[in-house]
Length: 163
Image 1 (spheres, rainbow, N blue to C red):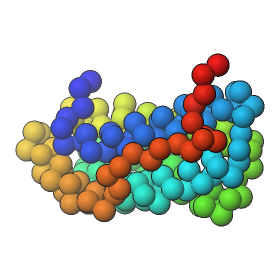
Image 2 (image 1 turned 90 degrees about the vertical axis):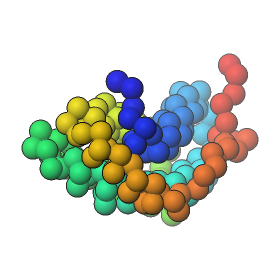
Image 3 (image 1 turned 30 degrees about the horizontal axis):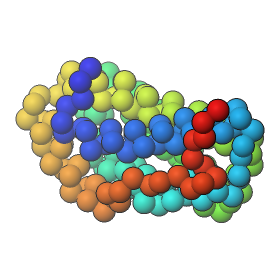
């Protein structure tokens, strides 16, 4: 389903985070893990983008979606996943993620994003009027204004390498 323009500001950080997951998964498969560098990049993304993103979802999107009984279980799942992901991001900030936890981190983050995009956002687009989505978009614009507007570039240790 084509993403409503009001939700696009949330989909862009999702794309950045999914790209991180793909790069991390490929590095793990290739056995090329610089644990310090990966944790630094994960922490940077969290600090510059994800913290504001999670807050915007929790203050604006989840309450709007929870008005619809059919979306309430998804909202509850996503809130719980935010807690799990915050703990993993905190571990990366403290540089305490073990190498074997990086794969679980990438899988958890990717699954969470796909649930938001495929279940929550699509459900909202089906259930909310154009006016409601537009009002939500205006609220998101304000809520997301403190997020970094640049794409974080991988370091030499975390960039994809040709095979």
